[in-house]
Length: 603
Figure: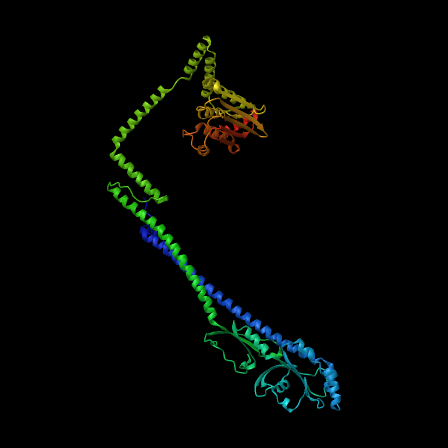
């Protein structure tokens, strides 16, 4: 034979154990580890991206809430700034206090209340004017030197825009010893130049706690800060106005990741940012969880295939080595059988073939003469069996000729009863010897059964009688041959044999709709309940058994003809007789023959 060359020849030279090891390492272990490492890297990247997106969503959510408060304050300033009646009241010169308070009560007193109600996060609304005839009080104040020295006034004057947002330090007006942080919307009231005799300023103070609350709501996710121009810390208000330093760790000592976003694009918050510091341990914990899960999956996905491959390959390797050793023994003319569980796979087939070959070779070498003698003995035994079979056969024509001769003698001598008996027996035997599994009309089957009953009546004499109750429509239906006589024979043999007194068998046949009902009933000794259950359980047994063979033969042939459309019932009680009935499809004579021919062709 031509020897394989190249890499195929090299592979063929590798021992089987090393081949299995290479298959496991290169095709199982390495792919599993590689896939799990790549999967871990991808999952880690996805987790980091997901957490960063989540943090940015948190930052955007807090930024939107903060901007809603600022925009609400700016909108409120627009509403106040466009109130013409306010300008008119603030630009008037009041000759005395009575005149001012009358105007205050009519115009100014309740002007700010609707705004305070509509904007719950607004702490105070203050209007400052240079009109010296106005008395400070409520929401209206004189723009004196103390007001002009305040940070808000300087910021409003220096601002080039109409609206300015400012966070600045101050003191609590109720307790001047306590410092307080103010968060104010500032605006010059100059919408109506005709009322511009006196300078007017609007200062809307936003509750600082509302901003702190927004930032604290997101604290479980990240630490948030609002930064002003030059990176000054504005909120939270606990330590405002400190220069921002990029935090490398959080309050609990964990390292942090910083995210920043512009608070808005409006000119009055130019340079404002919202910054968030997220706990880096959140990433690490999520990655560690995924890492534990992935490595657990990797271990399971490695151990399970490894165990299965070890078991399978060990089965192959062990049996092939045993086969190889016995083949080497066969070279030295030692034909030992391989004693091990063979299995049903291809290697098991090889082992079985080897064992068969070993047995055959040993038989050819050691037992060739004995085999020849055994073959000759077997041939002689076969010849003897055939001779015995020939000797035991009886010519049916000889049997019929003998019965006919006996019938002639009985007729000449006037033996009327014996003549009927021999005649019925002759017809019965002829019918049985001409047996075929064709279907016959019910009338023919009943005629055959009656011949048998006449023979039984001769046996029992006056102590036996039988009756037929046959519907006119039922007699023309087709039934399988010998489907009633075995039931009658069972009744005579097992039911009536040991009964004292009058014996009786009743045969009924009636047609109802599409079915034919047949009943064989006797008044014999009956069957007890336990035996009846055994008989019912044997109905589907093998026919080579000697018990209830007649009944089982009838049931199986009915099933052969009609399949699942057959119902057979056995009812019996001890000392009360037995009733055996069956129901089959009612087929007229022509249809029955056609169906039987078709069934025989299919069989």
